[in-house]
Length: 480
Ligand SMILES: *Cc1c(COP(=O)(O)O)cnc(C)c1O
Figure 1 (cartoon, protein in one colour):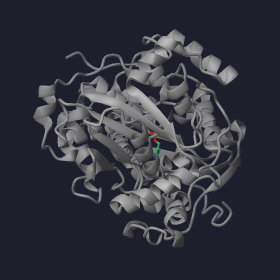
Figure 2 (cartoon, rainbow, N blue to C red):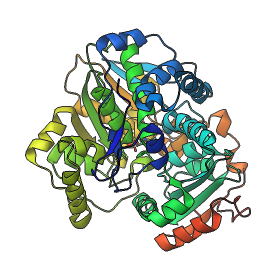
Figure 3 (cartoon, rainbow, N blue to C red):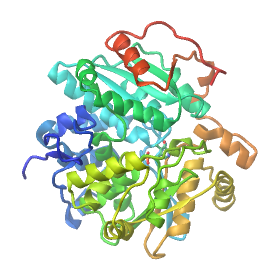
């Protein structure tokens, strides 16, 4: 098989192999990397993978995306280490809810959200590649809460990497913030930005688009734009299909969605041969994707805070990858559409391209009150506690499922204790913290606050990258 190569969705950056795409994150033309050709798995290939433990399956599914960049045995050990510290023997346990509905629990990793699936592996891939190259890089990322803690957990203390994580000040949950700011490692730098998650994401993009800064600091990304994360997330879609023996019959997924990374991995799973018949996007009141899939209206609005903060996003970065396929993989067309979206706040999309998306995707939005009602309903119907994101996924699945005879799998993206306040509002009691988080609020925090300004951020990066975190910076407990 020809070695895998990645091309930019904007068509004007050089095609790269896996290692370079992993380290680059965003392409130099502002686009996102996607495989030039999708690796293909036949139903027979899939059947041959059934029964493998999660980490072994991960190595097998990710290998074609890595190509010859990393040997099979190295990849197998990296995957085994990545998923060895999850707190459930199945890594991603599947729970039956009845009526052909299932819940896939993706919150058994070290930071209790699905982001660990990608980042525990990607952190190790970075380390492996950088050690071999003798290089040092600066990871810069924006988080609506869960990416940051997962990235920090995966990269804290690694010698070849500095990690700068931006979060919107006061707009992440208490547990999310503490999971980031209480990590005491010299290479971890938390920055609270006075703005929204979209502001944080724009600042990160601005840093990457400043090629001088980018080269000076060797900037790299672990946001969900990083292809390594998508590749790692494809695995649990395949895992479920094999568990349900649905690799020939087909199955539908309901995915609470923000940056479109998780559900895009479901799309990618379909592109490599998994019989995914429907992908259902759940959103909160920040419902740009729901308006797109249901009404063909992709219009930017202001971001509003909700009970599901990891989905408080208006511009879903990974959507560009789907757009690339909807527009016939025409980089110039994507560039033009994205420019118009930026300029006017409205994404131009033809009826034909939209219909293509509609064949596979549906979407539904839920208000905070509806989210709380679904948390109660799940407890009453099944005895399970679900977090607000997961509740929205389940609700969207129930609302939009097209075929009752096709199994529907809702992705449980976070442990309920990560969003204890919302669960408490729904049920009256806060869910117990997992033992690993029990003393979180007692640990000192490390974080600086910066205005929503590219200049301020760039100065901070230049001053701190490559050096151990300055001092024990201001304790922000209570200030957020
Ligand atoms: C990140 C996150 C989401 C959204 O996932 P995307 O890949 O950004 O669409 C949903 N739920 C939780 C708990 C998350 O952390």
